[in-house]
Image (cartoon, rainbow, N blue to C red; front, top):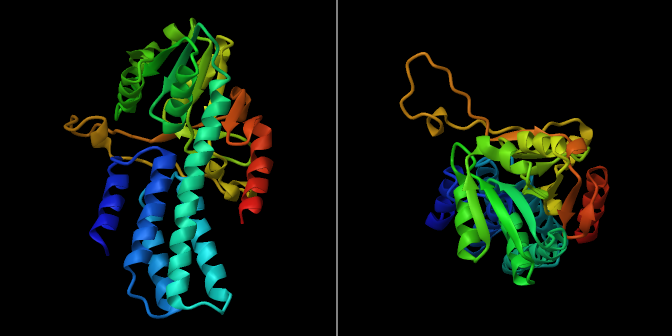
Length: 308
């Protein structure tokens, strides 16, 4: 396996690459590298190579439907190319690379459209609370700042990996009035907030949200104080398997992230994500506009069909 692909796998596992869109982008990039470096002489060899690499990539993080949907897109395209029966192995490789690169460009284009929609939810003089680190969320906030909206941001630090610090640094570096607070202070600042904005790792068929652990608490606090709670999410974060009763697996990470040298016999659990019910979510900000949680499944399904 190419060293760059191995490094991508390692970086995703160690959360050096984080955020659903960044992970999906890295995975597609790894597949492009695999195809470009492939020595396969037959379609069976090429398909087998892609399946092996795809399985390794998909196993890096269990709670990442955007990554799985991206892999599925490339694999389905490969099957279609092979089954056409009138292309050489080199033509198929070239087409897979071109399709994947086009996919990456569309991903970036969609994020810009989403940022445009999201920026309109932020009004002059507003206080926005955000959580963890989401490139989709920071894209919205930076877009709002670029168009001249005057607002402030409260970033929760987000234990145990402190991804909120990444958000705070990115926003403050962009010139946005940003304050970092501990997670336990969220209720204090929510009383003053106008909007709560978070990202997404997965969305179910009923419009429920799976996101960084602590998101559900923030959503419930938002409801208590009558603060609008929005989630910024590309449609590819939808998990279609939840339509058939499958549950999105919640990743359990190492206890050492919480306490490296805990007392003996002390039990530590470290779920990476939690579940926020659709009833706490005012809307999803997507590349097709702002939609209700109950509409997310149908909009995403239609979107997938139009693409494929």
